[in-house]
Amino acid sequence: MTFSFLYEKVSKDNGPGWHDDLSCDCVAIHIWRGEDYPKEMDYIGHESGFVIIKKLPPGQYEIYNYEIRGTPMTWSSKTPFSIPFKIESGKATYIGNFARGCWCERNTIAANLGYFVISDKSARDLPIARVKEPALKEVGIDVWDATKLNSPIFFTNEPN
Image 1 (cartoon, rainbow, N blue to C red):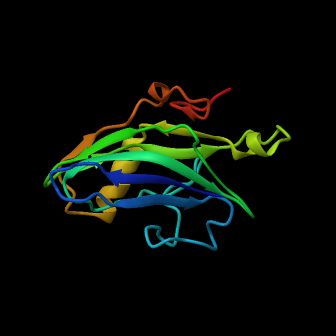
Image 2 (cartoon, rainbow, N blue to C red):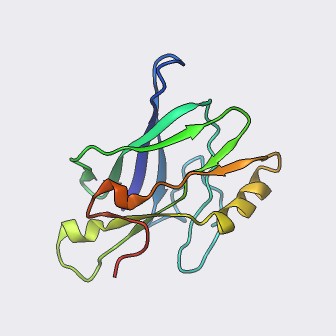
């Protein structure tokens, strides 16, 4: 299954908003890679994945949904949510580590869709980002507290 977080610019002062997504293919990451992903994993261990750097114009943004894609269906949140973040001119913003976990021992499609953990892994991720983008200067840390979403699938740590 693949997953994406959909985000949009919400600032009214910079003209009409636009939409984009951050995607990851969790099953066949070695076969499929979007343009944001390097050929090799950026880190391997308990979690394996990539540090993604997106260059966005200054403004207020929000992550407003997710998509989990599997054959032949796509699932998304039926409950609206907002994870806001701000991009300032000349600065970078670290919005966190977005990981998908799986309750694989449960035998239903809904349980196998899993959960998301939004956490601060800046100590691991920022050195990787600085190698990829040597001109990276000031980086603000703005990791959303997933417990504020009051959702059964968003966590700040892996659930038991």
